Length: 320
Image (cartoon, rainbow, N blue to C red; front, side, top):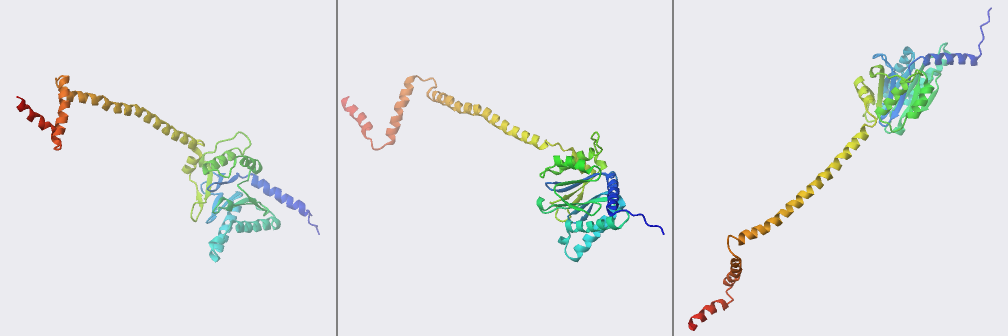
């Protein structure tokens, strides 16, 4: 009777882990980033039908690297788990943490009991009402679950790319800034000269916090090209242009002030001309005096209480 070949458990687990890691490293990397409006997933995938990023439930997304047939079976199992739990209890009972625990049990069981482990690595993310409520879980081939914060990179040169993402990531990044960072990191995955990845070679999806129920949205090629083409200083240049218009307004008001003062001086020059025309008409200065004398006579005629003017002509005839 032949004795079976003995392998220590430590060596067996080490061989299985090395086998799984080599298979995962051959796949293209996936970058998951949290931004100010939700969570973004990005990977290099020229296929339009074989997706590495998918929706699991209302506000839960799924991303994977490795062998497609293996992580596709896990995705389908996760959708069935979420639908059954949401139908049996309530839709709010379906969480990323519960789904991550279910995946961990499957991956751990296969890694220990089966002759070949699953060559996959998963990310399960859930967007919350606020940035503090967002959840990102990373699951490895042996069922280990890691609670990530802000960003995670898996597949390929995950450690090197993860450091680059950590250097450029901020919690208040916009969607355009997060995608530009993800594409830049994916372009440097080869370790050589950074290359430019066209929008048609990318697969990008987001979990948007502002959407009412189903937060998952897959970005089209045109929308992705517009986001990647946005200039980082576009808003700043717009602000500078906005300050240029208020500076032009005071200049116009200052130029208008001399015209207003000139108009105000014109009536002063016309007033004396009006008096000369009324007192002129070819008469001498004596006419002005007579006109000045006529004014009190008119006033005296108008007042019945002054009897002195009519008394003077009555005294004249007796002297003659």
